[in-house]
Image 1: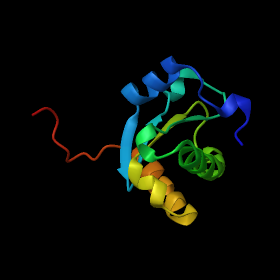
Image 2 (image 1 turned 60 degrees about the vertical axis):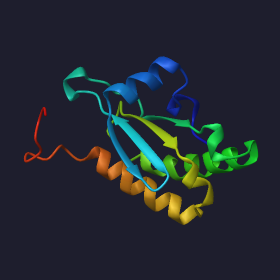
Image 3 (image 1 turned 90 degrees about the horizontal axis):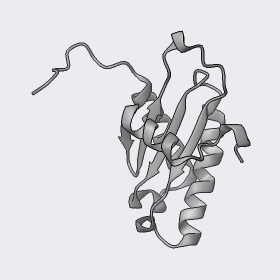
Image 4 (image 1 turned 90 degrees about the vertical axis):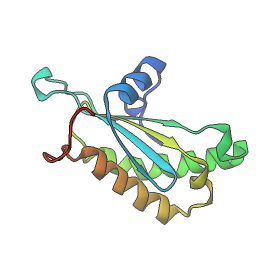
Length: 125
């Protein structure tokens, strides 16, 4: 279980992370990562939220996936910079994944979302 101060609760917070954060997808998971500017001096602990739509499965299935991801993300939050917010959006493919697969995909997506953009990437169209 995540501590109360480590959970995103307000829809505005979710929207901010999804709109302003970096995104990375891996096999059934989409991770949105928003890290504040270090100059802002944010010192609160990293926070996380989950979006698990009905398309993932029954309530039992959705809650099982959410519990697994919450447990996996708890250790990953300690490695993030203070003030970072994470939203994990679950896709229907995740329902069939094992605990170990979910953990690997979550770590890969977090790493990809945390990487700086490559210099060779084209801007615009």
